[in-house]
Image (cartoon, rainbow, N blue to C red; front, side):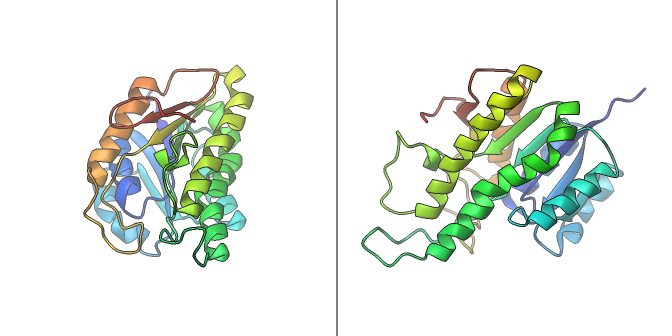
Length: 242
């Protein structure tokens, strides 16, 4: 009998998320791919043709309770177990203002809601199928969330959100590790991205290279259960300080 593996990935409209969909499809997963783009199904039509029956793209705004609940219900129509959840969805927000400049607090709250609370919101909605399945949650964090390594004078929303994601990851991990559950926190590296609203070619890695590193770490270390989540660089595997 064929054993199927199921994964859910958020933020799959483009970049790392889209590249991760490709990685998991190649690894024989059935993938539930959530994104905010109204053209998501069209964007993924080529992949759906290459991997018939194994790609399920759908609208997902992790900043919305209703959208996340709709996504969980849609996944439940196909399976009652999940082997892997990758919380990848995030927004960058405003990054130029220091404490002596005018700060856009609405923007900071929006970034926090999507980039920190969004991962918690989606994990909460899918925790039952995850605990029935592979029990692995991968949160795409950042070195920007490391308090010990903090060096920026800007990036309030994004840095605060990633630090909060790291904390929520430890709280979740503390609850599920006795059942074999674990949370893996990965910094994807400096990636060429459109997160700032337009394409930036300044990164070290393409989204495809970063996704390959992320998938490598998941394969190598995703099964490990530690007292705290692993918080590591995807490209090197080196631990990051909290």
